[in-house]
Image (cartoon, rainbow, N blue to C red; front, side, top):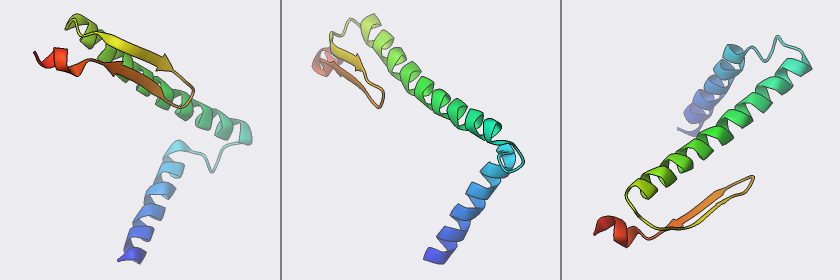
Length: 84
């Protein structure tokens, strides 16, 4: 069972590497790929929480805390008022 899972994982990783063209590229293109993937991942997280913030403001739900750090986004709101 574990060997099958490991083979599937190795296959998926090798396909991702092949699709992105990382093996054929130079170190600069590999670096750009990693940086782009990191930026896209961070932007996805920011857009999700900003959308949630706008939705809560449209519903007149008080957002008590909204802070960005480089590794997490913390948002606190009164969800009891959202239900009522």
